[in-house]
Length: 453
Image (cartoon, one colour):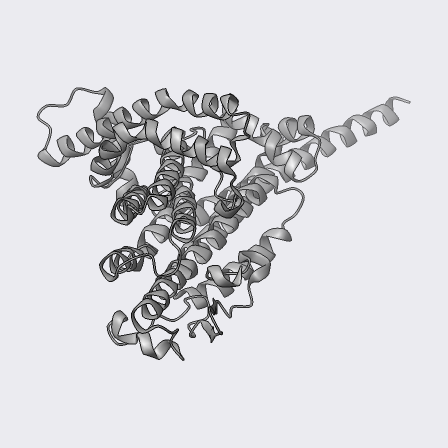
């Protein structure tokens, strides 16, 4: 009996040692893999600059450089603009409620042609309220970016509220442009749209994907404003070329690649905070677990505890390796980049159920990459669509081919960056068809000018 108990005790001790030894081996191997993968990611200088500027706002550092003073003054200018705008937001809802009209006119998904007289009254009353600070919006938009500073160590937990305000300002400028164009004030309407584009461009200076995603969303709002506010032939050559010139620099390819690198650094802090069991970081696991159809509480108990450290390390290593590939892809021509984006997306979908954090983060990154690709293709297409309509206004007919408008683009019409081939153009009796020939509708939707919608 004693011998049996002794054998049992030895077996238990041996089992414990095997488990502990296995855990230590798994931890050391995965920790090495995590550190090696994370070391390949670089922190952009622009992210360091935003962190330093955030510290300067709360710490007294004397003397400040002229550049730092300019940055801080610009931050304050945006904050004043946001505060002034937000103070008027309640009035927009009051207008909609007073007119017994749903607030759908605020959405760019609503076609202006479907608006009734009551809706137009709402829009005109709202834009009249905005008149007093439209000049300030245009002035601040000319300041450029970045719009705000932030701490990368806390950015994963931050809402970046200024991005919400920027999106709302783009919607406001869209409505103002539509209303002023209806009154035949085309110059004012174009000024509104370009001011909105400048606000969007300011976000390109912020090396995180939330800012870049908002930038692309703002451009989508303003491109909708172009199509809704101006009928074909409404704009004179000068105003068409102003829009074309601004759209020509709207892709911000280098800024997007920089933002991917910055986002990788920001997200690595999330893994570190999970290791430290920081409350807001652990709460992120609940969202990740729901996304992968896990039960929230087991995910929290598993990944935020020491025994699950090897699994968390595998999550971080997978994330770092795929982000490194995504950053490299963003530096390629878009036609090549989308192929790599697609491959990365397929690999993300195949991640193990034990990698909910990396899956959640990477799935969002893939989505933003697709939005950026759509934006690049659409920005070029809009330039061509505007010039084709200008050609019709000046010649009385649409061009037989896009070669006819090449002089307005310096001798060569831009190709579709999704395919590196010309856009599909087809002249019809009283209109034309202009669309991307890319086989990416599943991810990007149909990329087309207004006549093909």
